Amino acid sequence: MSWPLPLVGFSSRDSFYRSYLFAYLFWIGLTMGCLGIVMLHHLMGGEWGICVRRFAEAGAMVMPLMLILFIPIALGLRHLYPWARPDEVAADPVLQHKQPYLNIGFLPHSGRQSTAWRGSQSHGGCGADRWLWIGSSTREFSGDFIRSAPAEC
Image (tube, rainbow, N blue to C red):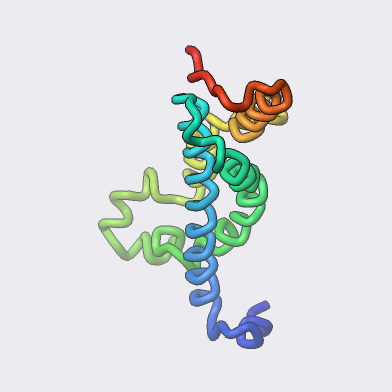
């Protein structure tokens, strides 16, 4: 199914997946940065984040979409990374040494570990972005949106 790639400006699957990975990293960086700003504002409190809070929350709410947009990267790992190609791993002693953690089977496991803090929506929890948005909206609609108290542990 590589015939439509030249029609959209890509000469090979490798160039498509590299370009897609670069664009994905740009957008996931913005999404994670927005989530970080929202978390920092909820942690610290104060008036400094009121003017950017809604924009940052909206940027953080894109996280489920970014998970869906990761699917082409997961499907194209062999085109992106040499450690995903068994023939190259067999020929390179450095890749053989790194194989316990650089393999396709480890990638979903590490992805689950890195996103575990978001919460599990299938187990009745809600993600951190949704939880922060609900708390922010509750304060805003109650009339107490100017003073944001720091989070309590």
